[in-house]
Length: 314
Length: 176
Image (cartoon, rainbow over all chains, first blue to last red):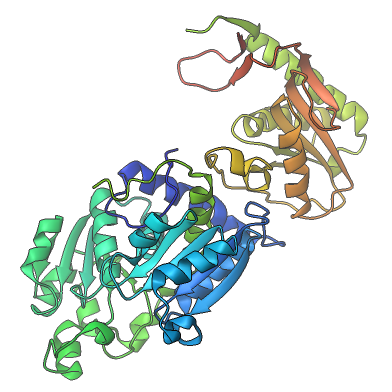
């Protein structure tokens, strides 16, 4: 048992023991969702604010349900209906929410470092629900949870992340989590979206899809992040899906027990064939179920964390 | 190394559990209506042991569940998040006599949390409480139905129950 943090801001600064603590705790919370009464009083009387300055459906709903199942009260705050339109800064908005005695602020923002920034100016617990192309820690934790649950372990597994790595916070958080847990991570996609510099994070980079998936135990597919790309990074969707999409023909090359993951939303026919997404080898919907358990665990753990935060120290 | 003395050794623990099992059987004539629910990390092991003895007395299997109460604790704001264990209750508790099993009864707050938690799974006909050690210092109006040993303690002392540790005898120790 190892958790003293007041916030969850990234995976990069977490120790392996801390990641394992979240996964173990999430295992207990997963069963709460299977009970007759899907609710426990752990965060009764606490107020959680979903501060989503960038659109999101599944992550926001997942956090919302997680907070509700822990008996917390939750307020949703989205950019289009907010005072951002009137020119208020992120800091002022957050401090106003804190003045209403919010205990947890869950933030999604298009700027990398937004969650770290808030953790420095607020007393509330801050949870990063995705900051720019930097990190999306709860997604990586739920992916690791799903892999561990399905394969029984993570250490020594070959995990291939296929798609738009450059603009993906999911990829970065996954690389940190999986390498810390001892997996062999391979990245694959167009060379413009999967630069060799990622090798510095301790993974293998290739641009040959067939080779990347042949020995994989887990294939994690990522969507093209059109909203973050400032220029055209590849010739076209048709060519992308021919070269990097997971088709039935490609799936036949993989190990028979290789499993397919995707953080969603999926683009059928682009990065993944429709039938594969619905097949028994796809873990896509289990990831959603597990996301709820992992987010409950994260809220529960940071609630107990009182110590000074490491942020700003390095 | 704090000063410590053994309250119960392995034989005494087994004897206490056998007596508790007989007391449970004496109190509950209909064994088929009794289920045991242990509170981790020690209570679930004790519940398994009690189940073995009881199933011989009643000549029928006595189901055992594991109930994690950490999500129902009232002190979550005053401490680091405690270790959470999966709850496994593979039976319906409604209209059953649930015997909660814990290692040490102290403030009574764990028992209160356990009674809240069990209600999320159904409405038992009765809830009874079996503990290996009652060390006093109750902060809530809670009393055990079955006690292995009453041990008067000072608040500063600690009661440690060691069960099933590799290379170690089962024992209950009082640390000054």
